[in-house]
Length: 443
Image 1: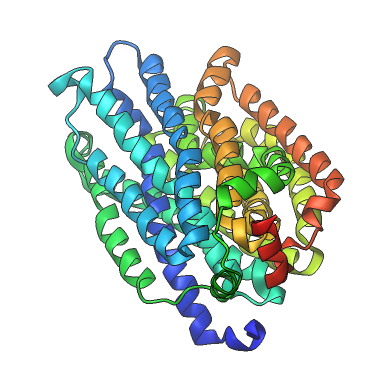
Image 2: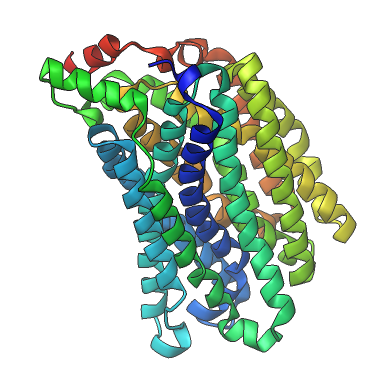
């Protein structure tokens, strides 16, 4: 199948829209948790110590990440055995079900310690679905795309992720403006979670109307002709563990900056920079706009210069800007806009190569499983702990420097490891032949 010919404007729009709509719904849900974290701290944990309540809120956030590698294995296996479409339909249901439940949970004042337990259960369900979402969606778009446009098409998909996150900030800003402070605190924040349901329904509808990727169809046919059974989990650990380990090391900085911007920036701006809630929402929106811009630009750059060079460049830029950007963001409203814009741009620069690598460095037969597992281990270890480490470091140092130095150090690791890992990033896994893919399964 000649995908360069087959991937026409209308078909390209339909494929990317279907993958992106679900992505938007799922990551809108994730963004909302971050922008209302201070309210969650008040509602679901004992009062009397606001810093401890906030730490507990982000502890639940971090614990939720434990389900992501498990979700990556479960939904990755489905994606590599039964198809990308099947996995995409299931992941959106898990994620959005967990989010919707958060919108109706009783508070600590109503049911005591059962409230944070239920909050954690919702986060675990949400995390499990998200653990399989990204690798499935990226692989779906990657495999539908001609080689010359893969990075740009994946960049479009990734950008919708950040649009979903940004919409969470925008809606929080609107609701907090049109509702009284008491009404927003009482039930307005719940509306943000419940809005994920219609977004999810639209995503499921669109995903049900697109065909499976050409690469997976070819793989399925080859499996049938060779009478071989798919064993993606075993093959991922047996043949691709080095690539998975390299991925985790190289994307640690993206995992950290991802949750820093998505789920901690609003809290940082109110607790460290002492901005009002509405000013913090406005700054977060601007930061997310720069994330989107950076992602789309890097799609063009990556198609031209290659994955490894793009990743190394993004790591260097982030290492240079991390400390001054967060330090500037703590200086007041003007500095917050400039600093948050810089850190948002860094996230966009890192996002495209980190997420494109999910599909590009692994072959078709194990692409979703290996990519999802490696990505979610990085996100669990470095991303899920990011907000709680940020709260702790900034509380200990009395400023933004602890988290900023941590981010800069991980960005240096990204640049150095990416530069050294030529074999993994330049190995041409994405262009493996159908016969080569079957060989991986039957060895």
